[in-house]
Image 1 (cartoon, helix red, strand yellow):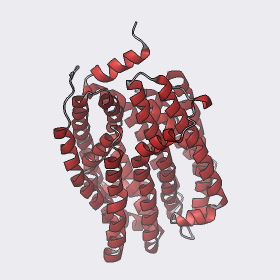
Image 2 (image 1 turned 45 degrees about the horizontal axis):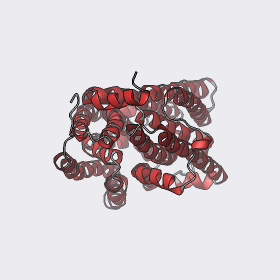
Image 3 (image 1 turned 90 degrees about the vertical axis):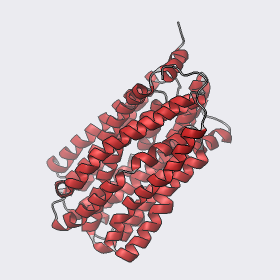
Image 4 (image 1 turned 120 degrees about the horizontal axis):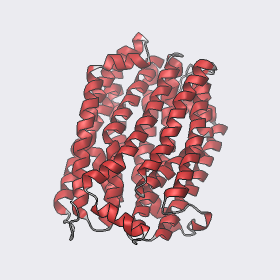
Length: 453
């Protein structure tokens, strides 16, 4: 009987590309969908309390992006090496990478918790809080910071399960936490009348439960193991994880910085403007996650097959991911453009918020159409360990394009410039990504053996 490693190798290299991506991508899409639904549930339930309360969720979106930046760097960086090790049938190496990333993540999350709580007031102001938003941001931020180690640990576990081809089990952990968060929002806000403090409490509880479930799933289903004895004693392991995960750090880290910058630039236009942009950002993330969640199934395929030399399968996966992503994004972007007023009204009924949010959502919907060009290409180069190219592409979206556009746009066009900055960034990133996609498709040789293509 073939070993588990042999069976996994055959599964990853012989399963038809479209079927493999869908089987790996759908559970991740569901996870991302539930995660974004509970983010939007926070926005909805807190929005019933008022503009300043809802704006606080936008402020904390920046903090969550910081946490995700650390998590994705460690999770993607280790996961790609885990996939490489499993392609080489070396489970000890896989265990070394995942254990090193997991315990590093818990430690980093704990440091962020302590520093964030010690400097909670200035930290919330740095993220863009006004005097009226600050009390609510502190209430929510307290719980987000307390749950930080569990959030980092969950995302490291989730990504490594995906790279081991166990996306279904990763989905179960995240979706359970997401559903509990939605239920907790309803109970703590509307039944217990705890307001924004209750919304933050629901988030913390759900993250802890999600972490426990994912840890159990990993122990039972993963080929690699998380043990203290597997933690690497050499700096090379950690440097390798950070190098390959660096594009994720750039992507999410600059997202947190640019979101904080957006909040600060929007301050002069009032709490209604911050609340409106919070709603637009939540919907845009929803579109991106649903439209490109299937691409999460492409990453383990790309990493494993590139390592084993099945380059043609990687090419097919890239094209399939981009095509499916565009189809889904086009549908959701159209709904966002046509029903912009109804969508914003669902989250916040204030006329001022609607007046600002509707044009911003329509601009954003146009920009999302270009994401299926840029994001899969970035996923590709990171998964095949081309960290330099992937880091450059990650830097474009939230750094080289978005930050200058926010600064120049707000100065020249005021609030309209802020509303247009992200959509223009998405268009530019999509166009710049085309040559990188074509280079890989035409310059990379095909596999010496084409199995079940």
